[in-house]
Length: 222
Image 1 (cartoon, rainbow, N blue to C red):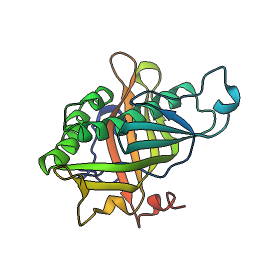
Image 2 (tube, rainbow, N blue to C red; image 1 turned 60 degrees about the horizontal axis):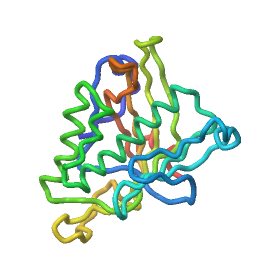
Image 3 (cartoon, rainbow, N blue to C red; image 1 turned 30 degrees about the vertical axis):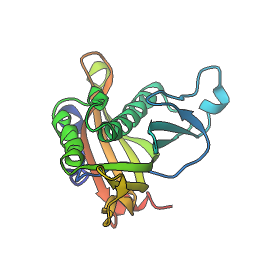
Image 4 (cartoon, one colour; image 1 turned 90 degrees about the vertical axis):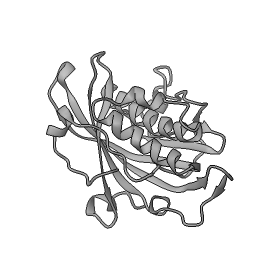
């Protein structure tokens, strides 16, 4: 489902999201701001010290499933909004998988072709009777490109994704499958092209990714 990353601003204006082969999103855990199902633990204006420094947010997706976000220091309003969209997509897609497709909240943050691509990503798990358990980690979040202005503004948000603490499960038994997929072993670089929806909110229109040994993905090693 994911296709090779292409940092082309033209994509921001028109594209759709393309996750790839039943692949989830990032891991590892640090004790930090923890969100219950779907809630955010963003720093508030009353907590400027936290907002001005990098911090870690944990979103509980389902029992045994979490998404950890390593927030950059002092993101501006648009960057904050885009990170929240990407976080909600990752958490929401996993929630759709663990709920056997009943939770479709992840579709609220995608538009255009991304709607079909995101649905296909979830369906790949459900059709094979697969689920997930573990922690996914999003880090090195960075707005790498912008275009336009105002309501026509588009942007590309890059993120490193580490899913090595995720495990693919047989949904019938709840046990890990014997042969774990590649995404459970190596981090990769994900790029999300975003644009503003009719309501002025940011939404994902296109996903691209680069896997090791691609040079762009080597920056995700640590």
